[in-house]
Image (cartoon, rainbow, N blue to C red; front, side):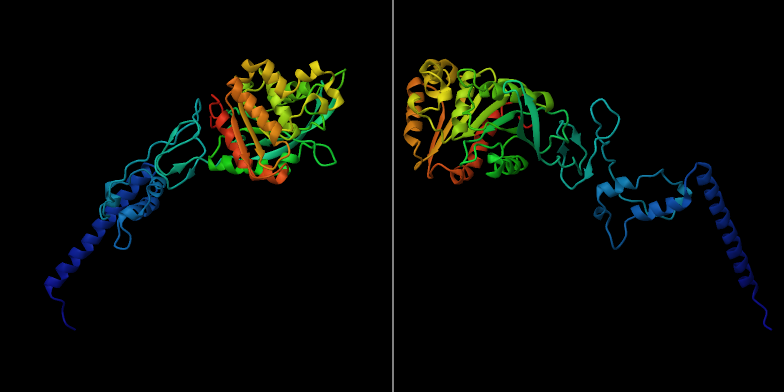
Length: 392
């Protein structure tokens, strides 16, 4: 058997001593990290996650992912053989709700610097949650003016539920007589007004506001003479109070609009002129204005008619009409065009500002459906100055 040269013996001894010293260093490093409460396994994983590699450059790791990996710094002994990562700026702190230490609910996004609905600036890569969806509620309430329970539909705009501090302007839309079955609070909804409003609001084309569809039968929305049903007080007082009491409105005239089609158009004009402390905006789509001799008996005598019809009301109270934002539209083939045009000319002679539109079409739902966007844009613009309203 050959003898191992002395030089090789010395080399073996040096290698063994080096291994023993390295083990001692590891034991000391482990003791140091465990005495501070750190996890050596997590520290090693962290270093590998943050270290640049040949297959994934350090810039490929999103800032949000880097922030999610933040842990206590490892000891020098544990990271002595790991290449240091590129510097990563610490993300700004999560914004908090006003008066609270709780972070505002948010989801990770890819957008730039963002601002939530309250004006709180969000960290880069953070976007606020989507607003709540719209919905339509069918309700009933007891009307003091009519002495009966009355139904209505109400459109709750997108964002209403997710923005509980916001208050909203209100649009009241009145139906027409209908075809053989009397008017219905569902007419505007069947025509697609609420669906179109939802779309325009979600697109940001108009501000969010409440839309109320009350029931008016064939009443012309007027207080009827000789002790008859008080449909005007019901609409302007009972319905409005019902909405103000149960929904987050701005309860003043500047933040209320009223509109309608056919009979509802006449009613909207009459109610805005007779209750100017309640409404500041009125829209009349295809009004059916007519002389006293052609009115239903519940308009009483001519003096009573003059106090409850738009034409004599504007003649006798032009000062009130000038406080309103007015809209009138009608089809070019509508049989009521002559009387509507006469009213338009009356407004011009009195110097009363208003919008006037004559579009192709006749007197029917097809015409009104074609102009839902026009109507909603008018009300959206008229209500856009709503101080304190959502989107205003």
